[in-house]
Length: 155
Image (cartoon, rainbow, N blue to C red):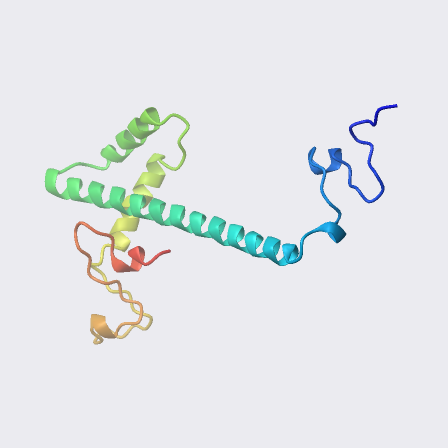
């Protein structure tokens, strides 16, 4: 009689239990395999964290840029607050199903830029006589084309 797909010999694990792939028992693995596997798992975990941080950094840069662009247009061309509602509708229309671009979120992006555009020093202590170079948590001056260093330093 022919062996069934899930019949196993002594010491073997079921193909079904392991996603259809028969594996050697631990006793038959090559020397150093365990440490090799642990190293790969650590690298995979680190790469996944790095990718998430990179994605977060890009989103923060995007939100800051959107806020900056809105403020600049409002100041230079006299755009009113209603532009935020229109932007929200147009962005959601251009990217159906996209999240994070409601009028309230776009308004928060504008506020984010205003809070972190480098025009206001933030100090850990309320000592007004300290200069920017002495303030532990001051927001550095920003180049108009780039993010402030505080935001650019986000991994």
